[in-house]
Image 1 (tube, rainbow, N blue to C red):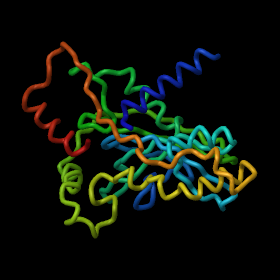
Image 2 (image 1 turned 120 degrees about the horizontal axis):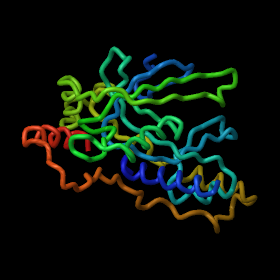
Image 3 (image 1 turned 90 degrees about the vertical axis):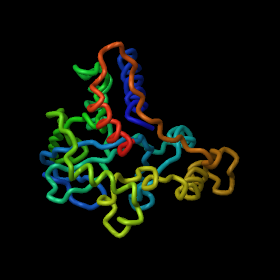
Image 4 (image 1 turned 180 degrees about the vertical axis):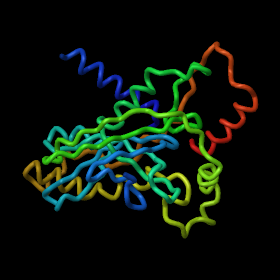
Length: 260
């Protein structure tokens, strides 16, 4: 699932609604807990995943396969669609990738800009995680009731990747060499590997059966995961406008190979 696919889904959901009416801590995840002002640079493709936090299992987090989603929602499970992407935390003194997992309050403005704003030079969408992406400011305000946390998200300047960041991107070309480093320092984090739903199948099947009132009855259970939807590469939109120079195009192409 790419930025383009997620943006298309977000636009479709928006149309349906309209017609009916400080640096984060941690080595793997970008944390905004406690609030504050955060600056990030997206890198590579984003993925949309189905997330379930289930109080009956002590608040354990489950990754729900796409072919389980509708069944679980129908049964009343609070499954949420979250977007996950690699980011560089500008306020972190250590250069590394982190995963930013958030919902529409954070990713909505990013997807809207991707859908609606074209690069003035190329007349193509500005890919948030591409070579010409922008930095983004996320201001998080946490009230007394954290459920009412407010997010203000805005784009900043377009920031090319620095030589150090490009070197970090290149590390994924030689995983054996960097395998002993913390995961965020080995190159882009493999989102599908972190959010692999297959290990949750047995537990989800049991939860569904119990919800239906018969733990031994698997008649209405979804089929097991066999072919999860793979990432779709970002597709450039054809245009009759002048293309970038060969030098610019080759530089961007090299970076795109690292990012996508």
